[in-house]
Every structure is written in C-alpha cells, then in structure tokens.
Image 1 (cartoon, rainbow, N blue to C red):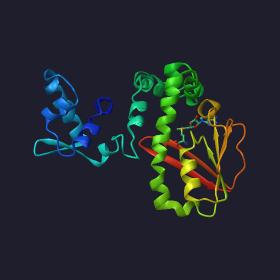
Image 2 (tube, rainbow, N blue to C red):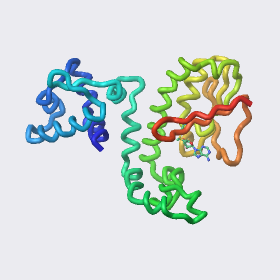
Image 3 (spheres, rainbow, N blue to C red):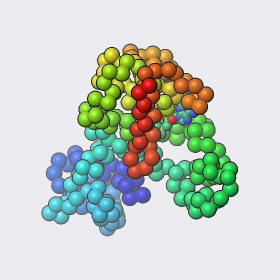
Length: 240
Ligand SMILES: C[S@@+](CC[C@H](N)C(=O)[O-])C[C@H]1O[C@@H](n2cnc3c(N)ncnc32)[C@H](O)[C@@H]1O
C-alpha cells in the first residue's frame, strides 16, 4: 500500500526531476502537500527505504534501481503494473483467501480465489468493466515492454523462426518487439475480443486474431505463452 501511494503521489518522478538527493522538506514542498503531513510522508518514505525503493544519502532521498522503474520517462516504467495490482478487486482477495484455501471440494480446485470473491471468472469480470480492462491491458503492455531486454540477451532462442503465435498476447507489445528484432518473423497475436477489438487485422508482420485459445490456436512454427506468476513472469515457448 505504501508503494501504491508512492506511485499515485508520483514520488519517484519528483526525485528524478529534482536531479539530486531530495530532503524531506523539499519532497513535501514538491508534492504540494501541507507541512502538517510532513511526519507522515517521513513514515511513508521510511517503509519504502526499508523495502529498497529509495535510499537515504546524507539525509536526503535518492532513487534505487527499483524506483527508477517507477519513473514515467523510463521506457521500462512499471507504475501501471503497481496501480493494477493494487486495485480493490485484487486487494479484496485477501479476505477470501483463507476460505478458498480451506475449501476441499473437488469443484473448488478449478475455481480461483477471484471467482470466489467476485462471483465470476477474471476475464468475464474484466470484460464488463471498461476502465479495469483498460488498466489491466496497459499493465500487461508495460511489463511486456521489458521483454526488449530478454530479446537482447536471449534473442538466440527466437532465431530462425518464421512464424510465431503469441497466445493471450495482450495488445501485441511483445509481438511487436519480436517482429522488429527479427524482421523475417510473422507474429499472430491470439486474444479475447475485449482486448483487441480495436486492433484486429494485420499491421506489418503482426496479425491480431480474436479467439479463445481453448477452442483454437492458429498454426505457426512456434507458440509463445507469457503469463505472470508472481513474483516473476513465466514464459513458455515451444518450437513446433
Ligand atoms: C496475464 S495476461 C498476459 C498478456 C501477455 N501475454 C503479456 O505477457 O503481457 C493473459 C492474457 O490472456 C488473455 N486470455 C485469457 N483467456 C484467454 C482465452 N481463452 N483465449 C485467448 N486469450 C485469453 C487475456 O485477455 C490476457 O491478455
């Protein structure tokens, strides 16, 4: 929750713009917060320093590698992911977690904690909530932008592949990175209509295909399935 507040207040951006270590008083002034709250900003920063998001240098705050990823100008900015993961829809899951884990019914092994809390599957819920859906898709895209680094370091994995289908590929961020890095590659992004209804069609080497992966997966030389399993993303990649 401290991180969510830091992202919403834009603390990393303020420190970045300041260009040098920022004192508590300077931070409070830059955030346009009344000085009556100085002690609370101090406590917030104390939690975030303790958890490695900021560092104190001569009684002033500086960014760490983690908080550099919260700066809006950074191409790998992950602030939207923090905002998405701290939406009330996810936070309420902690209230049902104990009951969900204790529920030994066979049917409950296929029911997620999300379904228990909200009475419907996650994707169905997202489909009915425009803003939530948009935030979720944006969070997926900002995280996928980091795949640039993967391609730079482990690009050899994708070499020689002519066609690839990114199953549940979101708005095509990773597909775009791949087709730019490997100009000979054609990439199909298979997604639910609610995610790509504004993108359907072909754009360069990228083709958006609306559909349900449990019904049909378009053919290609390789299948990519990239999901998030906290704390780190999982990438399943198979050459066919
Ligand atoms: C965790 S997100 C990952 C998105 C993207 N691969 C990434 O790493 O940024 C899972 C994606 O799978 C899509 N999805 C869920 N069920 C699907 C289905 N039955 N068929 C196709 N796509 C589906 C969702 O819309 C969502 O964009």
